[in-house]
Image 1 (tube, helix red, strand yellow):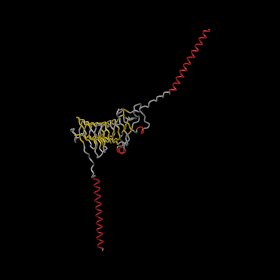
Image 2 (tube, rainbow, N blue to C red; image 1 turned 180 degrees about the horizontal axis):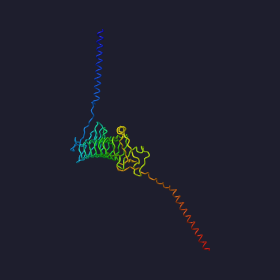
Image 3 (spheres, helix red, strand yellow; image 1 turned 45 degrees about the vertical axis):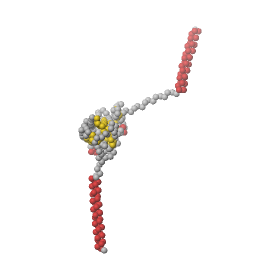
Image 4 (cartoon, rainbow, N blue to C red; image 1 turned 90 degrees about the vertical axis):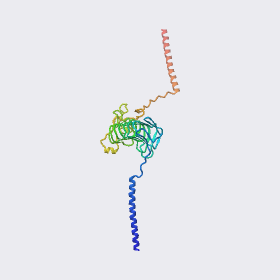
Length: 328
């Protein structure tokens, strides 16, 4: 009996130890699996305009005429990468829509002098359009789901609705846009003016940029709230109080001496299409209502009667005077 109990205890003990070892190994495996990210990100097939100008894979979604590439339809789940310099990509009002994966919707990769125009781009990646080590490019007439990311110099973004992230590069020009988010992480002499800033959060500004061109700045949706005593300088549409840009807290903490100021903030939104400040339309002076017909008739008749009575009175006075003169 005692031997049987000892055997059972040994079996239970070994079983317990095995369970502990199994749990430990399973835990390590789970940790390794979690840390190794065994589910890779989804990478979608890409349409590439190669360095020589060819389109790969061949598709009827893009037509080519010389150095101009034009979208012929909306593109769903196919990002576009441009690796050819000195070309034009005309969206012709179409959309690139990426709803799965982590791809950038449209990427300009190591190119120069590329124009992208008249296109809407949506993607899950916050960098909807990416200028990767690209310079002297023009982005115009574009709408994005999130932002245009710039790594490069002397690029221009204009007449677009987007966020703007300049990670590095100098002399980039951002003008005549509706901007929903902004970040400037590096570079110098990047200039913003004639934009409408409607921000939902404080911008992340790690360096100083130019926020006016020396005479005209930007419209900030909270300007009159932040500066309730600001007034317009003459009839210029420009506020008399400089707009100091309040930055996101981490950039303020890490780069406390960085200053970003719009010296010529706009009192009114900027009209992107007409390239002018959208001054408020003055209210028209109300036109007095005409008097009603009966009142007008009575007033006219009364005036006529008064004139006739006065004429008769003068006539009889003159006649009486004449008769008296004859008597003399």
